[in-house]
Image (cartoon, rainbow, N blue to C red; front, side, top):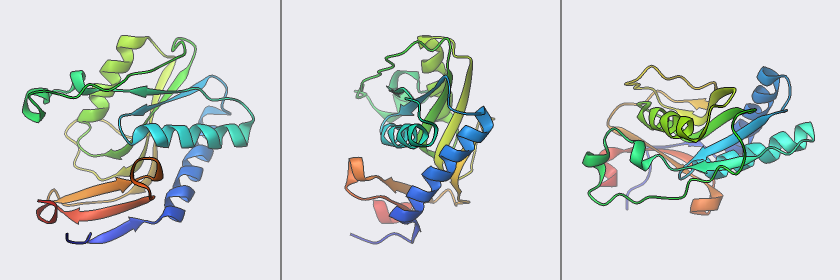
Length: 183
């Protein structure tokens, strides 16, 4: 197997980026009261859980977390899979009195976030919705912007950003790959 073009974030840099995002969330929201974090499958979930733990540590309040599967809300569902894999959506709290922060690993075209917004609104009407991502790689096709970004990474469309997290991959890192090297 070939190697990545570059390691963009090491485990320590991922940790520092998440800590910075937590501080930015607290600053923007004037604390952590009435916040909830919802991770988008797959790697958004552990990132949301990490952010919630850091926010709780910093502010001394419990931050509820949830998980969101956007599969059936995708606008490219017929192109992606004939038999889509539906994963669990779990939002064990009322959205009505909360400011929700959607969490994902990489922001690219914006289509995943658009689908997540549709899925979230079907569950209730939060006070507000914000977006936190570990990596923003550009190339937006929709007018969507993250409120909190761990790393802005301009990329070519022929490149792939691979986020690895300890919870899903056994290690924390962000790597940049050439699409051809992954085939």
